[in-house]
Image (cartoon, rainbow over all chains, first blue to last red; front, top):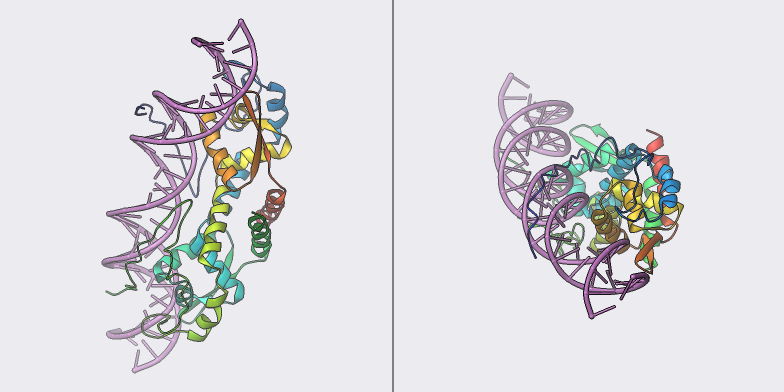
Length: 146
Length: 146
DNA sequence: CGCACACCTGAACAGTCTTTCAGATGTAAA
DNA sequence: TTTACATCTGAAAGACTGTTCAGGTGTGCG
């Protein structure tokens, strides 16, 4: 085989994973060959394209799932599902460094998965709402039926 | 100054994001200082620790969410939620290269989010089950109430 | 058979994520 | 105020992700 070494490509990303920007959600108006030569099923493409979720929505949703896509963060959440805990208790419970926990909690906070309150020198975190619990159940069910 | 100075840690990753391996889920038996000096709330830690999800489960679930953590894959899924489509139609519908689509479909397949069948030269993909739809709804609801 | 086409796969690059280290901020107690 | 402590934040290193390019596999047609 050979190497690729050609185009720059230069993708762009943001909070989690940004898509191109414009033009990604343009309708298939004039152009729209399925594959360069055979225009496989143009009708299908035309039908489905307007139903494809908006780039913005896709982006926001991807960021949300991204927050759940790390085992450590899931452990943190499962701990918080039980009870309110401060950072250093959390660190001990999931066996991570406190700094790492702090960074990860920021990610969870950014998606409003956890809330927190300060009491004295400690900051107590807890689960923000029960959407997470619901999602957890559905996903667990999905993974069960291997 | 000073800081946490826990341990080397040496993380390991795989399919999506692997956690250490063993030792991450060990109970807080003999050791277990919350923070080196003050053992903040040892009781809480002891209480919560057994409820923290297993490393394996966390890992599998993280991989699942990982598959949903990309805007392009979410777009592909939203297209497939409408109807069965072949790879090159999908590529046209979401405006991606066919190779990229193929790579992404593999990710979705690995989490059994889509299924496929071959017909002649084409391969038709469709949504595997409706857990995805459920999850989508819950997440959408969560994002709505910003 | 041999070509064309749809799709898949591997390697490489560039961008992103997660951890750690070091230091900064905020709060409480001496 | 000064000191100690809990937590946060920024930078850097290393691993991972997603795209593209080039080529490989499988299927149908001439």
